[in-house]
Length: 137
Image 1 (spheres, helix red, strand yellow):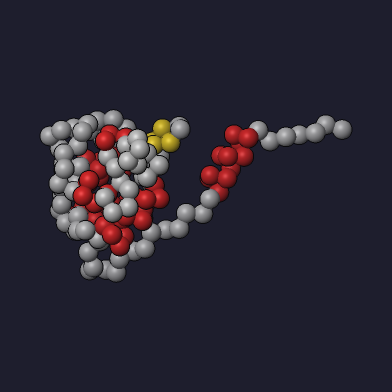
Image 2 (cartoon, helix red, strand yellow):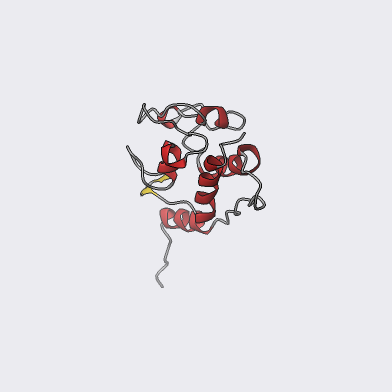
């Protein structure tokens, strides 16, 4: 009788791909998207693994309570002449281009072991709408 075993990496991929990620709350029509209420939960779920104070990628810390100030009206490290988030203008916001997988420099976000991976459309739209609504705290 042959005993089969599943390689640990295959188990990890299955667990991670099967994890149930709850969709972000959708602001009511006509209400602006705010960072604290709508975007920060997504940022903490999707971005915090790489953007902590210990080893922040691109010198960007997105930990609870500091992410907003580190994103809005600050210049990108990768494209110094471009704002990370320019309130009211997603196309002039480096963060939006990264999330929409159209970066001016570097790769799209978020990154995985296998490259950039597009977020689910409701989350992508939440980033766009937040910036378009004025990137409110």
